[in-house]
Length: 404
Image (cartoon, rainbow, N blue to C red; front, top):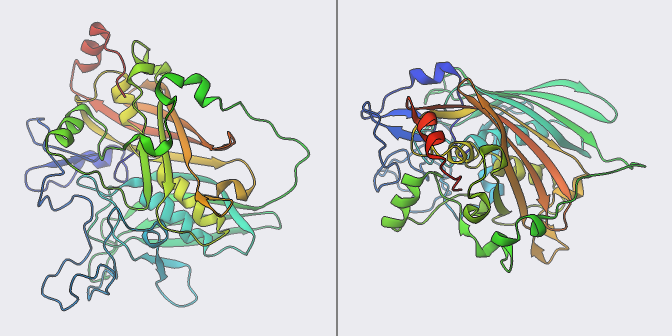
């Protein structure tokens, strides 16, 4: 989701900042009242850098080297190319540990989980032989990410085979002087890579997006839809409208389809959300691993908000965050690329839904389609969702339609 890095029960002992407790990516004061997290001067909003020392002589260049031990050299904003957002440098020559160089998107009190997910896979890809492309990522989020510190990715070479290879990645955020591991492991994943191969069989469900969702898609190009909100809840969407907030999301141009007409009156399991996305900036030609990381980065955007909205409790949750996230890429590596014959950038569409919620958790699922109807990837996300007592019951009694 558009969430910080994750969260099982340990997360709910969060670090208070300025009287606000971080629950997922939303600021909630001790009385349970939502606070604006995108107001001017909010220190943990998007675009933060790891070193914001105004006393240096670097001027306004966002790519200058800072002097901090955190090692971060760039700020991010909506113009930041995806390739720059993923930038890494080795911690030591010849080693398999890498440090992030660009501050991640942070819509609230913690960083966007999709950033560490994508960058972990990118770090792992630096250790595989040419021709191996990531096809399966299984991850666990364990602590919220801190936008003021660099991520350090420790890659373990689990197995190198002739057709497949496996990497394990453990992510920490060391303290500013690099002398300690900070709060511990904030993310861990297993990445599987494979070589392209010819297959004598293939099948998929038909995309048929225009046929199924014609009432919300007909006559519109992907870029005709509005920018995806930083936080996809009713209170934030109202705030963004009232305060004319310009949505920012580095690395991708991401558009949310207004599904209100389609979802009206449907039960939660039948609600759907469509989001279109494409990369900002050019990707190195034919670099399928970097393209795959862009899809990983997109797959987490606003995911769990679909579920609270489908249940009619979009403004009633008190805790939300990813526990696990899995992505499988299905076809040959060329299906992942964002170049459309070298002429125009290609748009992809994430079709998302929820099939189950219980016991303070919910399942988010999605399929990612390309513009020609090919099923490029599938995702599954187990998320923590907690709401104010009675909110689920009240929503069910009022039979609120899903508004996404």
